[in-house]
Length: 537
Ligand code: AMP
Image (cartoon, rainbow, N blue to C red):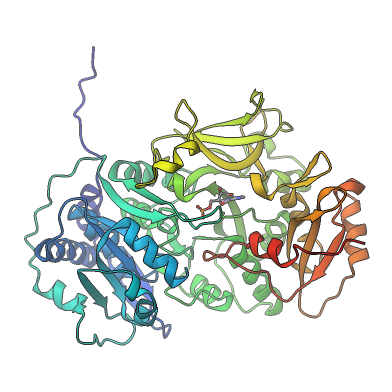
């Protein structure tokens, strides 16, 4: 016998309608490029997002059409997050930090029809527009309030659109948003998030074990809205009525800290490199920023080192670990302590907090090895395979990528991890970032974590470099904190307290900055190339 409940679709218009009616006074704060602050509300956002849907429909947007956005984190982008899909289109957020050639290739692959772009980003558009064609380019007067000839003015379109928009029929499995992967593992691939996936993911964001966000929170997504939809927060805040702070292009440590203090942020999210910079600023300016209560800093993209977690705690910034991918919308696992750990010694608690956490509800994970599934014993590692309602089932138009799914339909992540009996995942490495020394594997992540716990080390990145005898040996690239010093020998001795001799890096190079990917992660590929011909002693 079937249940007697309604088959009610899980779609974004329902979230938008509710936000407009239930949370009209909740504030959305955006910062412009000149750092001035613009305050609006979910009530105003609701009207404008519907007007955008109406305007795009009048311009000819058909169900399933891709509308690209090249925008910073601000309320106009939030309007696009809802206006495009609620009008039946798919919002394709472009990663503005990619090379113009890559952007043009992605636009073509996605077959984007229209582009929404911040006025201040038009110089970036000029660089890729020869390789990519849009039927309409709509400019958002975000920075300077003037829109040049030849472009449509976003504000004029909204002013001309009525308030009588009627949503088109939308199936919950229709596409709503599209992101291309950040290309850490080769050429970017397109992921299309369905309405249903985004709605369920937003429920998950509210859970205490994930972001734990709700009506009393002020949320600051530092992660760009083009990186896995700022980790789903714009949708979740709108559904859950959280006050939203959108930082615009200024995401340097001081600007972030200013915003966190002045807007009384309770939850922030971003990659570890952001918080490494924030820690540095806090240490250099004691007492400059004061927070009323601890701030939950949700951190992922790469593993936040244990030392960073420990050093941010006294400043009231409590790191909470999140692991995920563009392909998983992105929440896969999230971390923290459990009830039975309450009285554990501090050091053991930090070790737990440095793990990636356990799978979110409805996310299933298994660790695969050539000989089969690895046990959850905290020791045996295997590649993470994942499935769930917000996990990608195929890439956009990429039949050559079918090998990324197992024969029984799980997505192969390329991340290698262990899991323990409580379900905590610990990422050992990306499959290709493990250092293969002799027949043994060395985890670059463990070495980096330890090195970043050294008082003189600001950043550390370990890569495997070809070696005539051992196949590969680890090389550690180190950025020291200003005004400190450390020698290779000191760092080796420091690591030797925790690692076996054969696991220690054979070379330490001191550099000014570690190359970053477009979303702020360490670019290991660039380091591997830079030191490919390293002369081992
Ligand atoms: P992206 O699609 O750009 O979000 O990249 C996804 C990849 O980032 C994952 O496959 C992991 O390799 C890495 N990643 C994300 N979160 C974490 C984390 N908390 N710890 C370690 N690696 C992470």
